[in-house]
Image 1: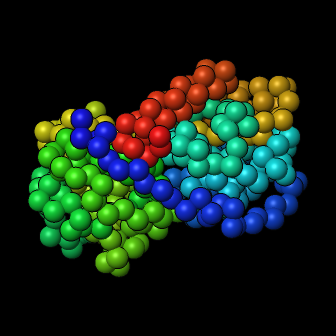
Image 2 (image 1 turned 60 degrees about the vertical axis):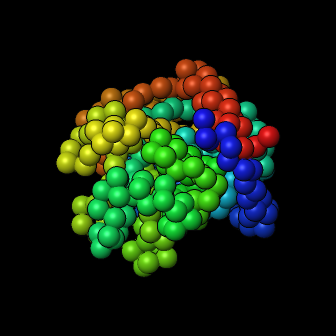
Image 3 (image 1 turned 120 degrees about the vertical axis):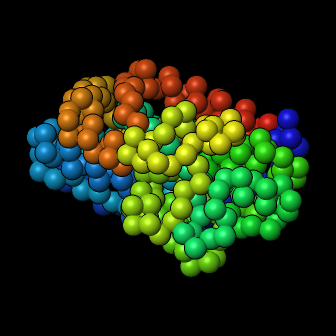
Length: 324
């Protein structure tokens, strides 16, 4: 498998260490989105926060705090150091965050936190600017196979992160020999990546539909492929990679964690609230309209799932040479 030949890529771990965040304990429920406004983690917090309020599952409104940096590492470090027992605090996470943890890019191990629930899965997509000469997935993969360094690509994870891995999987499946030659730029959220693509700084974005749905609806970008088994319900006209002869899928589940010292009573109460939220029409409609596939895993089942996912991501990362 050519993925195994990818040379080791080193990221600037100093990013998280260099950034300092002063956190004020929440006086009411707070959800931290470890990204800039507009990204998938931001959507997770704002939508869950809104629905929690609509259903009366929390008192008052949910405060959403954006805390970008290190693809979630800055928020993780702050919660671990300053608010590990805060029962009113929840934090958005996903496959992207767990991949970073599995690669040792967070300041503490995965077990530092308690994982509450998964409420849906976002579908990975590969997109170009609407004015791009690249019209189809076949155009893109042919260009990468002919000259992997010709196009600058990017997404909301670092080199070796989930967005990057998904693009490498497509390139690998369609004949690109030197995967390490594909140029990749990291952004704090799919919105930032698309904005830079629209400005001409990069040519291709690999990210989640939930992060860029607004750009798709406005017609500013063209999605070449959805990395899903079936078309996205909210965007049925977007072809899947599979339908174009590329057997690659890439889902990004979305969920929440809380501090590792939160009591069992508070943890279980959060799981119960979130399951009620998941089963509501409010959440089901909000999730599907944003391109998410609603999926529920909560409590101990979700804790086990996260640990299994981390082990899988660690093995994939070893296979492509990101970690030794």
